Length: 485
Image (cartoon, rainbow, N blue to C red):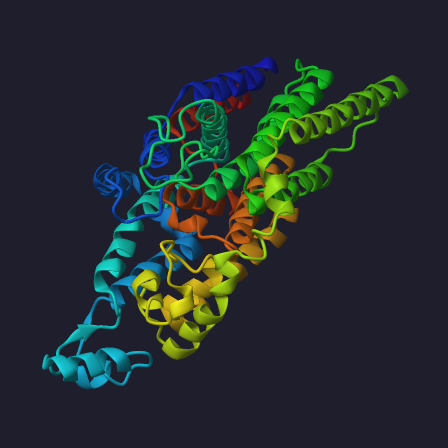
């Protein structure tokens, strides 16, 4: 028997898998690119949504055409959770009889307006601002398309998808540098309502750009780990690439100016380091290699200190200047928190309606809070989700946390490569959760896409089942039987 045949067959199989780009992977890469190009703002009146949302609906249809039963059964928890969100939003748009609607908590002011104006009892949906809830329903199309495509992919394809997001991080960071060197109201800012003069990149808000930059740490770690698995790659080159990439991300965060972004960057760097330690394979290193490792990291630390000192001395570290002044104490998000809590208390247990925070919050604004700057969101998405979605939204949040915790414990039973992929997804989800404590990143389509992709990466990857692998395996089995005969 030719013992080299299985090895040659395995090489042919691996080569065919690398050269083949599946339809679901192509669709996923397209919708990810479209989301980052046209979905960098959370406002409902952005013109780019006229392109993003119809294309997202088409992507959902295309994903359903390639979806198989095993894709649904292997990802039943994610599918059930996504379907529950859709059902909740649709339920908030179903008209209710006047007698039921008028006794719902928080609706008394609308009932009084109806009596004074003579409108009388009318059928209304549960949402106090139906047009805003419809906007929330349309916004679900983009992350849903990502989930429908991503659950069809193998681990190799998911790593490729995350690598494409890493390229978006670089592109957005380069655009942010160009924005700082250009006119604050020039054409390099993609949205009319934005943080003019700040390094926002592909987004309208610097906090959302900062979250994407922080996500660069685990994405860079995943790419370098895959690169380091190749025997021909020099370990010193990997370390230098990691240090250069990390310094690039840190420099981008310093000039971005987001205080929460600085926190997320620190958390992302620490979690990425922890993932590398947990997922590392034990390898005996000679004394020379260990010395080279310490020299490399020591040099990187010196460069980091020099970078921060240069940024502070040149007054480019915007985030430090914002931390040192009194803006943190006077932040409108903190001053408006009591009114947000009052709104939450009044509308429970059913909420004010998904996506209705901005118009409903105006009911609770005091005269001292009224200013040219309005509150578009609660800047704490955990509180806002419960305030607008009620107890059912809280249950869905709890179910999401249970799902993530269950998959996190399951990471220990996976292979080295799968632990890296799942750990990267976990870090990205944690970054979104941390960012949601003081902002609303998930309401931006681009970040929602990143979260949806990360959620799929956290679950156990699908086995390879493409035609090339099946064909090669069949040929190998036939050849074995012929030798046995």
